[in-house]
Amino acid sequence: MRKAALSCVFLCLSLIVTSQTLEGKRVLWLGTSIPAGCTYPQNACANLGMTCLNHAIGESFVAERTFTVPARHSGFSLSMSMEEKDSAYRHLVEEGIIDKHQLDVWKFTSYDNRMLPFLQDVDIVVIDHGYNDAFTLKDESALDCVDWESEDKKTFVGAFNFIYRKIKETNPNVVIAIGGYFQNTCTFSYTVTGKHVSQVLTAIAEHYNLPLLDAWNYTGIEDGHIPDSEHYFDELNARYGTEFYNQFPDENGNITYFQKFCPDGVHPFSDPTGESDRMLDEIFTKLLAEKLSPMLGWGGYR
Image (cartoon, rainbow, N blue to C red; front, side, top):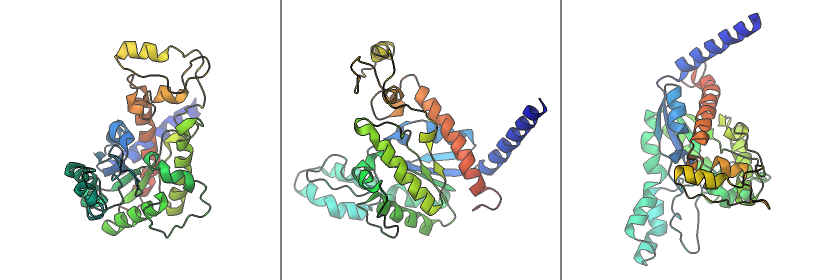
């Protein structure tokens, strides 16, 4: 009983210190459609008394992505400047392949528009990227030949190195944190991307000694299929008026644990029950408190 009481006192004191440390801090959150659409950036920050500027953008990625036939999301690289995108893609407008509006959208997602102008007014930058960089992460996840001095924007690490330098040049005191993907357990089809994302983000965090918001270690998403779940989407769609379908059925028509977490196969916020969003809210609140408080408290950056 005495031990439990002491544990409670310690927990309460920890929460008070965390609240005092993070209260009033401003966070710039960069990333993909996952943090753009999920509630965890805003809710986790609000839970700790912080303000979140959520500048995550759907379809965005860090590295420069080159397509033989340009796709709608070809120019969403964070590491390219507006001028670089205009130089690289203006000819597509002139050739009638894309319209000027699409080029303007691509330029809007550039680091010198979505990141640099806000750095002086924030205490923390969370870089929550990875999933959309799967085109390069698979090759880089072995991490045998990573050049940590490279700023080659065609690689994830090189593009990250560039972004990191730009942030620190603009605001040397800002704390940079790595936002973590929500699973690294699944091994079927494109879901294995989570494994590659987690490996590269872990290596980057270790190299730069950055706080890692490793959400994949807390969601508990199992690999494989849920027993007796063959009617899950029929019932979900009937209740919420959605139109989800089983993308990875087994021989019995069961759904995967992965797709229960994100019914559209990509986004946790697609779960109409709200359970996935609520879980990530709790996980990121815990991780922000644990990982950022030491860096922003006594002996930290600020």
